View (cartoon, rainbow, N blue to C red):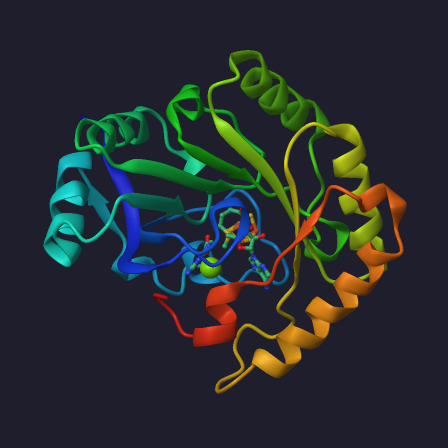
Length: 240
Ligand SMILES: C[S@@+](CC[C@H](N)C(=O)[O-])C[C@H]1O[C@@H](n2cnc3c(N)ncnc32)[C@H](O)[C@@H]1O
Ligand SMILES: Nc1nc2[nH]cc(C(=O)O)c2c(=O)[nH]1
Ligand code: SF4
Ligand SMILES: [Mg+2]
C-alpha cells in the first residue's frame, strides 16, 4: 500500500466552487504542490508552515477517519491540496475504496501533472493558473491531460480559471478557446486570504466586476461565473 501525505480532513461542508457547487462533501487535503501561486489560499499545504501537521496515511486509514468524522452523512469526497496529482498509486487505491462504498471522488488540480487514476475520478476540476499567480502553464502537459480525458469520455471534467485582473481574463479566454467543448468556469480571485472577519462585500464586488466582463463578451456565451460560495459564508476560515 502507498501512503498519502494528508495535511487536513474536514466536513461535511458544502462544495463552494465549480461544477458541483452546492453539493455536500468531505474534504481531504494533501500536502505538497509543484506550484507556489502568489495568492494561494492554501499555502500551508506547501510553504512549510504546517509541515508538522502532515500525516502519511494509508488509504484505508483516511477512509476510516472520514467515517469517524461524518458517519454516513456524505456521498462525495473532494480531494484537494496542494496538488493531489503529485500522488501516484495510493490515490488510485483510495478512489477505488470510495467507489466500493458507493461514494464519489472529486479532485481539484491545476493541470500540471497527469496520473492514470484520473480516469477513475467522478468529478475532475482542472484549474490552470493565470499570469497573476506568477506560474506559467506547460501547454504540452495540459493538452495531453485534456486529450487523454476526452478520448475516454468517462470522466466529468471541467476547467476553472481564477481571475484577478484583465490579463488573467485574457488568459482565461485563451483556455476556453483552446478547449471549447469542456465546461468552463470563471471564479473571481480572493485578494486577501488572511483578512479576518466578513469579506463577503469585497468578494461580491469582484464577482460583479467579472460578471460585467462576461456580459459584454460574446466569446464567453457558454462560460459560467461563480463565486467561492464557502468564502461568502465562512470568509477566510480554515476547514470550511
Ligand atoms: C488551493 S487550490 C488546490 C488544488 C490545486 N492545487 C489547484 O490549484 O487547482 C483549490 C482551488 O482554489 C483556488 N484558489 C486558490 N487561491 C485562491 C484565491 N486567492 N482566490 C480564489 N481562488 C483561489 C485554486 O485556483 C483552485 O481552483
Ligand atoms: N467549501 C469548500 N469548497 C471548496 N472547493 C474547492 C476548495 C479547495 O480548497 O480546493 C474548497 C474549500 O476549501 N472549501
Ligand atoms: S496550484 Fe493550487 S495549491 Fe498549488 S500554489 Fe497554486 S492555488 Fe495553491
Ligand atoms: Mg479552498
